[in-house]
Length: 189
Image 1 (cartoon, helix red, strand yellow):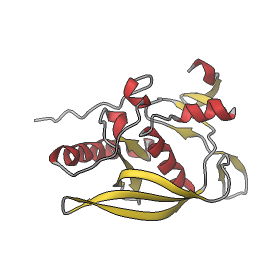
Image 2: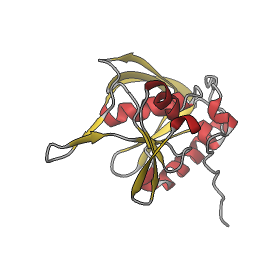
Image 3: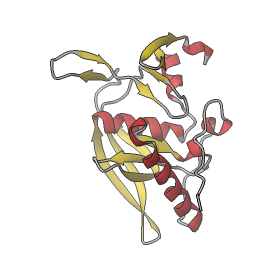
């Protein structure tokens, strides 16, 4: 028997623009939704670092981030950024030879599109996780790539998409066709 996984919703699916309410209690439904999101995120292999519940049609305030080399998934329920350090910048990738290039942020709900988005590179975050059928508060400081992905996924739960930042900040948006990238007019998205 084959179990069919939910599909990842793509823009302009209306749920991607919804602000999702807080999770108040643990029940069988949220546990099943978390399990499904985890399976889908693992199945994306190297194409995704995170996935929000809204991206698979769940109106619950949680997302998953891949952690470690084993492709494990950490779930963040009712996530929020509570403090930022520095200012928002366009993240850069620095190569071993010292060369740098813009980090291009992508999103499973926008296949083949990647762009420059200003992000905080260090954030303090809070969230809840399930322990013994209860929600338990957690807190930590994230930096670099982990901080970028946390911000991206948390914004999904408020209906904010990475293209919104590109439009507001005047960033660049690219469409990848094979290994070639083509500049896209973000106003047409």
